[in-house]
Image (cartoon, rainbow, N blue to C red; front, side, top):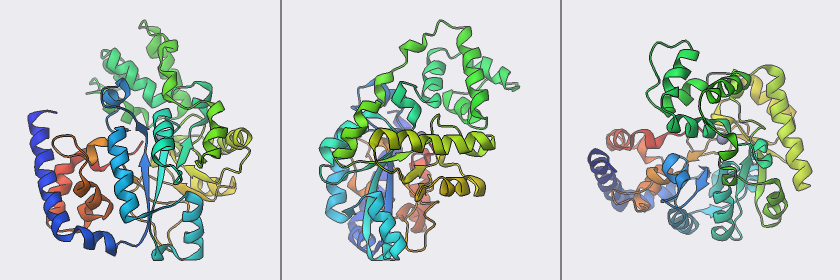
Amino acid sequence: MGVVKTIKAFVKHLIAARIYRIRGEQLISQRRGIAILMYHEIAPRHTQVFRQFPVLCTAPDTFEAQVTWLSQHFEIISMDEALRRLHAGIADDSRAVVITSDDGWRGFYQQAMSTLQGHGATIYVTTGVLQGEVPWYVRWRLLLEHYPHLLRVLAHDLGRLEAFRDADSAIAALKQLDYARIRSLWHQAIKDVPFDEASLPKDWFMRQEELPTAVQTGFTIGAHTVNHPILTHEFDEVVRREISESKQVLETLTGMPVRHFAYPNGDHNEQVVRWVAEAGYATAVTTQAGWNRSGSDVYRLRRFDVHETMCTDHWGRFSEAIFALYLAGAFGNLAPTNRICAKIAGGGMQCDR
Ligand SMILES: [Zn+2]
């Protein structure tokens, strides 16, 4: 961690710890509703995936500390139970959390299996990964970080005068395109570099053989499309196919109805929401942070993004105070401290994968 980042993290933790000491218990006990937590991968800090995808990863010991803390202060429930409470209008009688993970990262599945015994979690699977397909945004990041000159080539292909600053800004631009165009740009990009697609880390993601065991051990399997396209930038027939095909594939593999959906990148609009409902899903989750309460739209459920850097102190250790205040909504509700905290927390408060 650089000096500036360390100082920011130190100040952030100092403020959070102070607020937590004074108002922590009160903030938590006043909370009513259902908080859905969005994880991606769980991996040790020294691994390649952790180093290259810091805003998607949580370290195993941090995850264990979070689950211990969560189970002391909240009820950990399944998505089905969350839906039952939302439908019955009794969500506001709860102080509950649902643990979810997007894309089908294998490290989350394996770690959650041992840590969450008896609690279960919902895994929103991008079905392409089950056949060894690496999600497009993962493969682009690996490619661009390996061949930085492609930041200029890609920018040129997209009609931009200046090269992309980094892989993040390039991927943000790709997210404005439909999936067919992203694929075509990919094939164009790898033509000019000695990049072997077979070298992509396929073992980062779950395989279809793991799904029956996942269901038997208490996981809920939800859908996250086939190819992870940005549904609001996609052609109608592609959107409908991505929504329904992923459901069918997962139902065939698990032998269970698939009732829950996660919008890739959280992006949705009226039409996408309607098609998700028409396909037979009972809920859909976004990446908008916040608590779900009685009356919340079950096709626009809010989720708190969780990853290592948003809940650790300047030493890189899990901070109960920062995590608690984040879930309590303190970064958004406590003026003027919230503005200081939010500013210090910076990009760590947002995630839209
Ligand atoms: Zn995703």
